[in-house]
Image (cartoon, rainbow, N blue to C red; front, top):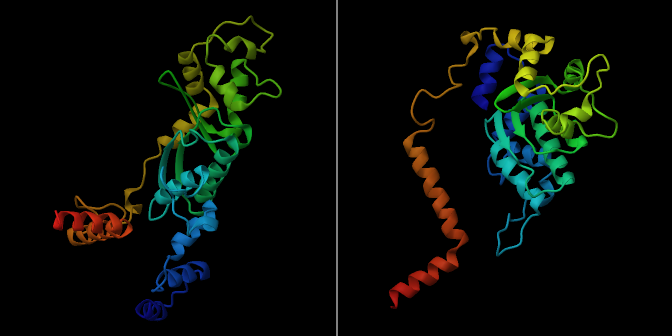
Length: 271
């Protein structure tokens, strides 16, 4: 930090106060947790149980919702900026799912990350936390774009969300041959089943699809890539660092179960 401060003074660099304070706090030694870990605990709402073991079938620990958030925190902490999460709400109630998705949204907006999450029939409050919707059905891209525009797209096809109906349930049923007819509201022509393939073609020809295509066709400027963004070797860390990390992990596991190892050692010695 002294060397960094010296270089900043020589080059007349004045860092942002928030970033400067974060960097200095991260370099403080002798702490049990780093400021990055403490920040993630705050974002995920796990600071109230930070000193509690996760638990197992034989040992009571944190609750089910907190355990899900612990798993999310393990993925978020570190330099990761992109997360792929599939069916994280399995076995959880709607309230816990809402809290987890809200925490992930805080991670996206506060830490400038990207999350691709798939949920099964989320509640209305949970659905409204998403920024963009990627609607896939039968291998076709039916819609991809802002959450606020998905109903407008289906209204252009002749389907409308009825009152007191969840948008997630509507999206799940509007492509079904059995349930699609109940959402038809176009009085100018009789209802006729619209297959998913035609919906996908309509999306490509709509302003939503053209806007998405124009965004994807912009070539990326490779000169903006930082040299350290990707590792040029098979392993991002040196072999010695990997060895020390694996050794420290095994030492920690043995320490946690010291009674078992001591008992087994004595059993082998006196057998």
